[in-house]
Image 1: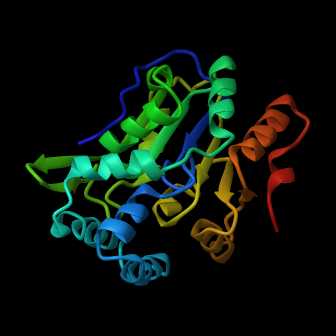
Image 2: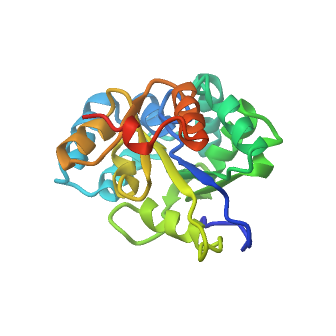
Length: 250
């Protein structure tokens, strides 16, 4: 199973950026893409996704059904990676945001319900080898047996990977007895529901399912169209030009 790989540090950063991967750092959700094009298709996935959003089905249960439809069609894990390398694109502002965070000693964590080998391949391809050294990935994993494969969940929760728990685990690596960093989280969908209340400012991709959930639950958030918006708000908040509440949407 995947887990945090950071080491304890005495230095508490001024901020930490946590982000979902699929549909957040990338413009397309790789798991949705695989299900729609190599699994049982968009229509069935949409029905399951809607049930997860209103909590009629757990994320883990619905996600598992989606992913199992891919190897059931005889599609190997290697074929999935080859397809994703062709079709998945990076958010145009992410690389600049990551580089600014690195230059300003702001840790970046990818907290994902996806599978670590896919995230690693895409991160290296889309952002570069150097980013692999400075971005910590906390995610699910995969078990491969020939052409058959299945997801290996990080935990036993209904999410399969409870992102709020992972955020707490990441924070335990820092000594926060004297100061606490500002926590930013970026997401777009159902898998981000558990993390929505674990940050000081939630960035939700405009028009996606996370916005609907936060509006219904009364959770403060700000919408973004690209990481350029996120970077702008982070700079303004950390410089004191803006307060957190200035970014909250009604």
